[in-house]
Image (cartoon, rainbow, N blue to C red):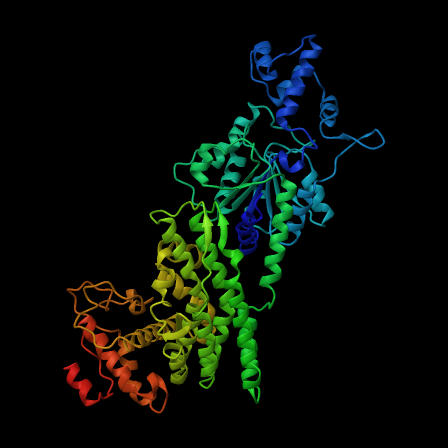
Length: 634
């Protein structure tokens, strides 16, 4: 096993607790107990011995020839003429081992069982599907103080929930000694309708970590994994990780075609789960280095702002949280993986960055909303996030990336390093728009610079082309859009997803979504003008018929008719009424501020270039241009 192969698994389990189910086979028991396959063949040898015959070929073939039927669990014991008590006594030999004192005793759980039990207790795993008959997993859980619910084919369907409210063990092939067991090829061909339905729901709702299961004889379970009797393709929200030894049976082709599993080569189940647990513990300690939630961060900022001298405490709070976000982004282990599901890995990375940056974004928004003096702090925070050093993803064996090349996919992952900067930028900027804090707006949209190096010399440049929604997340637009209905219960594009994320972070600052959307429109317009202010003169209708630059694309404008960059070129374009109203009041509201360097003519020039580039009427602001600019504008 390559230890680095475990990193994406640990990352997925920790990022999505109780959303990955385990599918365990006899390999987890470490060879302490025989498999159903071995028990079947041994029982047939006993039957042959009772008939005075000796088997010199596959016992299954001998049984078919001798009795003219397929061997089944009930059929074997019927042939042995075993009563109920005899049946249990016969099976007891297979589920016990000879102890130190010569007595037959039940073997104890393996290290794999105990590691899994610890993961359940820690809230990482809640659902275990197993083909094993024994109670080793249950005993390991009980030792951890966890009382699992055991589900078999005889269980009430009401028990068959996919909600992760408690630990459930689904024993698909039976539970010794409580039920009949599925262990012959004939037994394993099919399952009851209620178990098939339950497994299908599990395999749809959960990601899977498969370990210790060869899938060799479990044809019915393989069929369910591969989609079974479904007429539509199963929609899976999480990936499948399949652990297998180097010399083990290949994954069935129909399962590969349906699940596109990521394979991890392991030596033993004990080693795999021990390494997985170890990696999760490292990530957990790292992620919780400075534990803080969105609500906690907001409350801390508000409390400090009420202090007589908030400038003594607020910078430390914001910088410490910025440090935590940067350390998370810079962790190289997060960007090293092999045999990944490209879509799942991309979305997992996006969500992990999102969750990590959300507290800082909420804290920055709170500062920008309530105060207009911490401009240096805001700029410093954004400069640090914008100038994240390059950590090139080192991934291989990428699957499920549609029309992208590996190089394009890796570049898309690389661009996500600016996702936290984008979240903080938008949250603080929208908040500043809401309260008319123009100095803070200047600190957000114009003062931060991106560093570029020419040999040993550092140059600065505007950051807008690198840190905008299209540039950061455009390569995963379709994947992100697919998350919008699942997370926010509404259809939409990747821009809708992003605006929903921002609103979730800062909704406490707005009376309703309508007020948020208006401030979002205004901020994105100001952001676009900050970009245009660095470009110089714009050709008429330069943006109307050409590809729209990322900094000029809006999250929200596609909801308004006749907007620049959205409507067909033949339509008459205009800005939304609330933006026109804002522009009409801007001269008075931004007077005496440092907005656009304290020179509103710079804003006005960019404003007119925007109108010229889209071929629209320029709403009036009352801001005058110097004479040379008036001549050029004409």
